[in-house]
Amino acid sequence: MVTWADVRAEDPGVFRSARNGALLLIPAVAATLLAGSLAMETPWAIALPEWIDWSRGLVMVIVLFLAIVLWIWGLILLSLPGDVRRGLAIKGFAEQRDLFYSQYGRAPDRIGVLLAEGRGRTPSRPPRLVNADPVNPSLFRAKFALWQGGRTTIPSLQIAIAAYSGTDADPKGPRNTFRYMELALPRRLPHIMIDARGNGSLRTMLPGTQKLSLEGDFDRYFSVYVPAKYERDALELLTPDVMVCLIDHGRQWDIEIVDDRLVVASRRWARSSDRAEYTAMLYFSELIGAELGYQAKTYTDPRAQKPRSQVAEAGRRLRLRSAAWFTAAFFGIIALLLAYPHVLGWFLDR
Image (tube, rainbow, N blue to C red; front, side, top):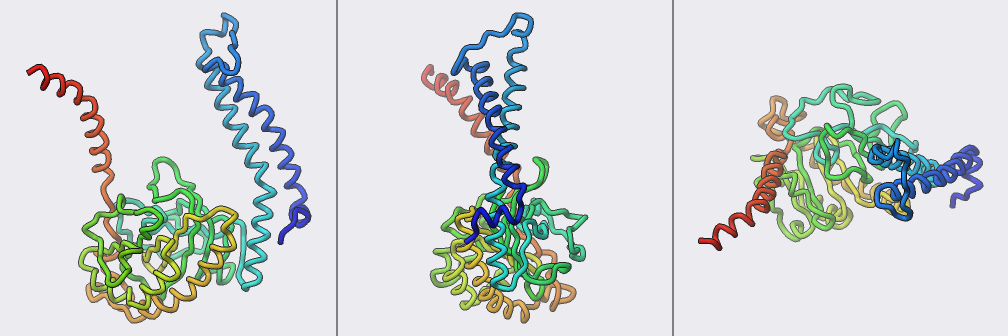
């Protein structure tokens, strides 16, 4: 159990930062009230001098922006002691299991659906670098990272909180924040998305033509997507033993096989679920690593130039739904709503 005394010993200045954050909330509240009074005359009606009343709208926007900045800055500073305490708890958990921990781990590679690689891309992956991929930089930061392997090598296993750090112009994944596990596989495999049906579907991103139905109860818990003409390959990898492991220990997560990585994504990323999720993911990594790892070692892709180590281009990435369809559907619905009164009036006047 990590105490606040442990937090003070680890970082004495963190409580001073929290005090400053609490002080910032005072002007934040004042600026919020002022913005409300200028915009809606609530809780008070404020009459500005005539020489500045013409710019009431501009003043309101400036005050509102200031309030937002003060709230964000103050709450971040207030959360720092809790973050240090959370980090100490995860660090202790990692030491008990002979793993490494850092508040910020290696950013996950920008590959696959979950990590927002992008729409319709089939990259030829460059060699992996220790810190980042300069050609295709990551769109996520890895916070509260627990990993296996050396400090200067690519981790064979990493569990962390993925926090989106891209811009509005960058591709988006299914979620902006989630807990993830990234596990190294013995070789590159076809792209397979195993979407857990119990936590929301990824079907809005993946065309149904790539969906594969599997035997037994597996379809009750997961929807599986594979590239066209790689259905037999998926069946070779997702053997009954692998499917039982997924149902028994991973049915609450979305699971993606992409390149030589297995990525697991969990919606439970809050502090209260740290111990349960880290424990469950570590146990799952041992089980699925053994089951899927064996299938990966024996897998070959006869379509590839080097069947024992490569995957042909057609199997490297799933096709994603085109954003143009969603844009067209949105504007189509707007057009129908706008045209409906006129069409109805014309029909009634006939």
